[in-house]
Length: 324
Ligand code: FAD
Image (cartoon, rainbow, N blue to C red):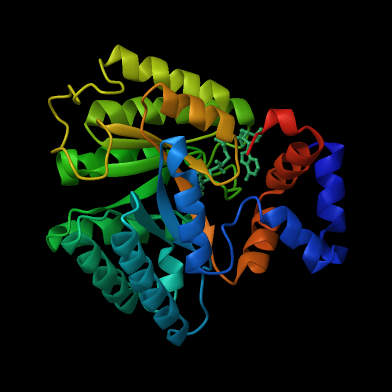
């Protein structure tokens, strides 16, 4: 992290809420579902599809989970009513995973069932290492219960990821659908890579492992070396825009998905790279967070990973490095 990033971190506790709001406007669609729908419609012309995320995580009472269950039902209704090309991403701890796993599973199943009836995919975001295994277990449990419209995220910085890729693929076959990202949580060096170069290598390796395992591979990185490596890896396997997935071990073609892979970006981050990929015909998905808890979300992300502070500062001071 540069000097500016450190400065942003130091200023955080005394930064007025309206300033945080001004910065967050770029990365958060707005306080409610209507604002998320507006953002999705406004980006339609950029060839993007979307995943909706209701802001909030790790609840302290199970009653709080009811809010997320009903808000995600509203989000599904809006996706259907507005005819937008979107799915949903949710954080298992917002459904009670760290309080009562059984209830969290019931909550997630309710939403996944409604989504399944409407051909909509559900992605369980991956949180910190306390819930890696249980998040993966929920996905396999949902598949056991006949719901194949669900997948999760694996974080390439974790040493365990190679094994998780092969276990998920052996259990779910071509129905395995994984978003692969570096991982935002700064995990300890006992369980994770901690240096930029090693994390990039691990990410590139994990992408190839997913492609070879037949998994639907959602590449979620704004990092140019990772994107360039992905394009080569896809080309080496005969995969690409407007080509039917050639992999013998791939799953069936599904509504709302690309030919075995897609690229994913966070709202407000490196839109120029995303738009170029879309122009070349790649399926590109934008992660759209919305909700009244935007302030807590922004502060928490900054505290969890100070690099984010540096990225944000850089986007303001050197806008050419990161176009919206
Ligand atoms: P970096 O090297 O960190 O970033 C490359 C460049 O992208 C930076 O130089 C900067 O210009 C820009 N950039 C990256 N991140 C930001 C930012 N936050 N704000 C402003 N500019 C930025 N992590 C999880 O742990 N669990 C998840 O479920 C998860 N889901 C994700 C979903 C999507 C669609 C994406 C894109 C990321 C997700 N992440 C998740 C975050 C991911 O793990 C990384 O922390 C994040 O994407 C930064 O890594 P990078 O590969 O983009 O590379």
